[in-house]
Length: 153
Image (cartoon, rainbow, N blue to C red; front, side, top):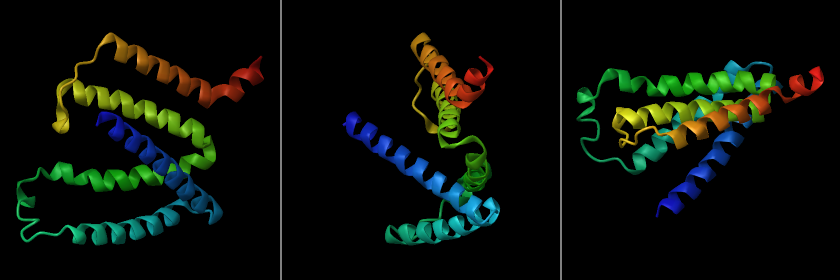
């Protein structure tokens, strides 16, 4: 069962990388990543409404008042994240951006899981996870700065 979720997550990683690269390409093509993102987010909002309506239940928003308002900023965080990525891809390249982004995600996920924050099951940080993160950061540095490293020699 866990292998199936892992495979699905890898697939989502492919979709995310292609989606964000497409977004960056449109932003570069029209020379305005903010406008490109605004269009993408409008299309995304319409898609979210359609998908949400397919599972709509009476009273679905009845408990929204009990949700910490800070949690509702996730939508704004997602929009700003995609805006930043679309602006950065043409500057850094997709590989450097995604490996750095992934390293940041893994580090944050380890901390969230270590403390059980935001509903994550508690999984303490151990030496193997630290070694894995250090290897990932090393990989991010190599992918990001390869040209500079080899140009200097």
